[in-house]
Length: 270
Image (cartoon, rainbow, N blue to C red; front, side, top):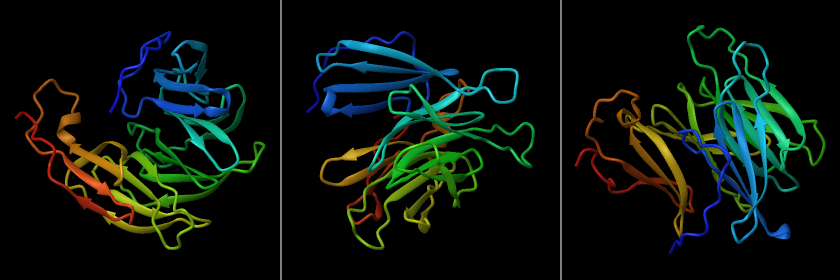
C-alpha cells in the first residue's frame, strides 16, 4: 500500500519528460535526494524524512559548441559497488558528477558524425551494471563507461549496437553471481527490447520486437521482477488529434530474466 507523505516544493516546474524523476536514499545520513529536469537545468533537492527540504542545487548542461544552451534529457543517480555518481544527459553530451552534484568528474561530448543536420542528437536512458554505467543515444548505440573506484579516469570501454532507432530507456538487475544470466534490458522508439548480459564485454542475448509499441516506463513488481509497460507509439504523437486505439501490453521480466507478454492493460479510447 502507498500513502501520501508531505509534499516537497521545488523552485521550478518539472519538464514533461519520461523518467523525469530520480531518487537516491542515503540511510547513513537519513536523507533522500530528488532530481528533476527542466530545460537546460536539473534541480537537485535534499530532504529529511519529515519532508522538510534542506538544500537545493541547480546543475546546467555543459555548453559545448552552439549558440543556444543544450536541453537536459535525463538526470539519474547511478549506485555502483564502490561509489555513487550523478549522470546528466543532454543534446550535446553526458556529464558525470559526484553524488551531491558539487564536482563534475567526467564529460563526454556527443558526435553527430555523418548524421543529417536535421537529425536530433541527444543521449537518453541511464543505468548502472556492476562497475559500468550505460547510456543510450539517439542513434540506437549504447555507450558503456568503465568507472574506477575513485577519481576521474572514466573510460568509454564499449559501444553496443543492438538498436536501429533512438534508445528510450535502460533497466538493469543484479545477476547475483549467476553465470550466463541476462541482467540488462534496453528499449527504443520502435518498441524493440534488447536483452543483454553485462561483463567485461557485453553480450546481446536476444531481441524482442515490440510491433509498434514504444516503451513507456518500467518499475519493480513485487515478487515478479521487472515489469515493462509498452504503449502504442501513436499515443506519444505531439499532434492534437486523439490517439489511435490500441492496447498497452505488459511484459514481465521474470527472475529467470525471460520476458513474457501478459494481458493488455487497456485499450486507448475505450
